[in-house]
Amino acid sequence: MLVASIHSDVYLCAVSKQVIIIGGGASGFFCAANINNKNVRVTILEKQKNVLQKVKVSGGGRCNVTHACFVNSELLKKYPRGKALLKKTFTQFSPTNTIAWFEQRGVKLKTEADGRMFPQSDSSQTIIDTLLHACNQQHVEVKLKQEVVQIKKSNNRFTIQCSQGESYEADYLVMALGGLPKIEQYAMIQSMGHSIIEPTPSLFTFNATDDLLKNLMGISVPEVSIKIEKTNFENTGSLLITHWGFSGPAILKLSAFAAKELKAMQYQFQIHMNWVNIPEHKLREQWNNIREKQSALTLQQKNPFQLPQRLWDYLLHKAEIKGETKWSELNAKAQNKLIHILTTQSINISGKTTFKEEFVTAGGVDTKDINPKTMESKHVANLYFSGELLDVDGITGGFNFQHAWTSGYLIAQDIESKEM
Image 1 (cartoon, rainbow, N blue to C red):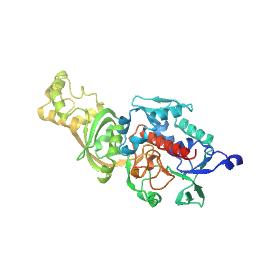
Image 2 (cartoon, rainbow, N blue to C red):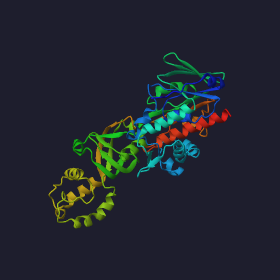
Image 3 (cartoon, rainbow, N blue to C red):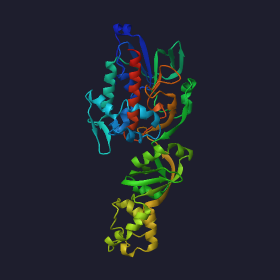
Image 4 (spheres, rainbow, N blue to C red):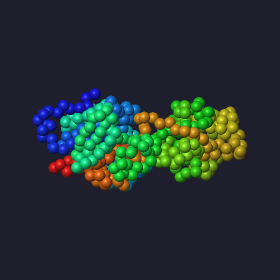
């Protein structure tokens, strides 16, 4: 993978200011790609041996670039944390701007039924190649295996020390490290006067203890309503049953909004599952009509809720109803139990499962310390923060990438304006 351009001596002589970007992810590269000033030299320092790894695996290898959500008030609802900052940043660089930026570089995006936007190639490599090409055009240099261990500022310049002994000087420093899962990893940032909101995992699946669910592995239900017991967190959406429990958009969104509360519960809690997404009292009102329409059929033969057959059989088993029972023969006790299970089944959750391609960290640098017009620190001049390092996180669907593009772009614009 080509990640670094070769600088000519003529070019280097013309350079007056140095920008160091720590982190070779989406936001760091987007920032570098948008600094278009020949008097500024940009270097990206990446700890790993490869760059843009999260871009590569996102969206199942297709890269969910952004979301077709063009009304700011609606867009903000997709972020459990960071709304105060995003309310101002998205007015400056929105999904519309993201789409235009990529299309200007020959990458057209397509919109899927749920609003997610992908490159028409259905390959994340298209996005990676575009970012690399844009950075090479700007003569951006990329240094791999550069783990930053110390940052100092003196005489308006930053000194960045790396673990292998390398040292770099910068006039502008951009921290685009991504989500750091442990608060100890923010020590350098704290030492510069910034507050840190304790990091917490977000976007994870639920591990269920009901052994019978293992027989339902692979079943997808298009619309269920899920509530976390003893909380106000509830969500409706599609659900996937896995061999360990529950996944799918409904669960991931719920885990994002309830991330901090679930961590406090040590991921031991109960959910109430409404499999038919109909309130219990309304289903009771409809029940006689449902029953009369298939009175001559057995319950196993006729499932009036379009649930997958294996799931319907499981729910009948939970209600202690034999499949060969006719709808007309269903007694009041069995009927009440089935209605309750269909609308309010309690399921124990014990633990979570997190995948690299979906993993997001809630928490990070407190956004109160950041200027939302520029992403510059309010405590240290010419120090910037972008992407997931901040206490900003979105649900699945391209929202976290949109924040990455927006914050990276605003930093680039501010550095450019200072060097005009």
